[in-house]
Amino acid sequence: MSTASRNSKTYWGNGPGNSPRTHGRTQNRRTSRLTIGNGSSSVENVDPSGMINPRTVFVRGMRIEGCGIDIHRDMKSALYHVTGSGTFEDPSVAWLQAEWGIDDEIREAQSNIARRVAKANKFRCILIRKEMHGRACTFDRYGRRNTFRGDDGILRTATTASDNHMTVWMGEHAGRILVGGHIYIIQVRDPNTGRFLPQLMNDPTNQRTKSLLQPGREMVAEEFWLVRNTWERI
Image (cartoon, rainbow, N blue to C red; front, top):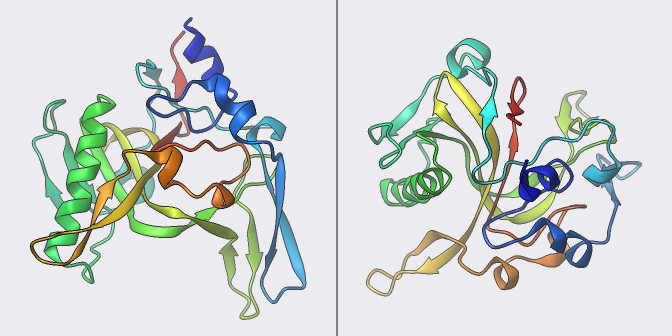
C-alpha cells in the first residue's frame, strides 16, 4: 500500500500538489463552534482526526471497490443538462437540479470545470449536486452532518461560510457513484464581455480564504471522499 493511500484515511482534502504531510502545518484547529438558529444554541464542527467514524479521503490513483450510490435507485434523482460521452477522455456531466435560474453561459462554464476535474481524476461521470455556492455542511464527532430545528420547526443542516465551490459526485456512471466532494471556484472577468465567469482555482494557497477553512481541511482546489458502500482496495 502506498504512503498516499495510508495517509488518505487520516486527512481531508489532499488535492493535487498537496502532500498529506502538510496537514499539521496548514491547519491547527480540531473543532470550531457555530452559533445556529436564533443564537441561543450552537454545534461543534469537528476535525476528522477527532471523529469516531471519519470519511475516507479520495487520493488520485486510489483503487475503489464497492457498489457505491445508484442515483436512480438510491436517490430517485433525475438528471438534467447531460453532456459528454461518458468516457475517460470525455466524461459525462449531469446536473441533479434543473437550476433554471442559471443562464447557459454560466452553466456551461461550471460543466466544463466539472468535466476537467473528472477527467483529471479518471472518472467517466460527474454529477453536479449544487452549483457554485458559499456555504458548507458541518459535522459532529460521529461524522454525521450537524442539524438543528429552526423557529418554524423544520429540521435544517447547520452550515458554515466557505469559499465558493460546486458540490459534486463522481464515479463510473450514474448507477455507480464512488466519491463526492467539492470543487473550489473563482470568478474571473471576461475582458470581451465584462461578465464574471467561474474558473477552477489554479493557486488555492493564495486564492482560498484561511479564515473560512473548516477543521482539518487544506488549502486545495478540490477535495473528495469515498461515499457509502465503497472502500479502498488494498
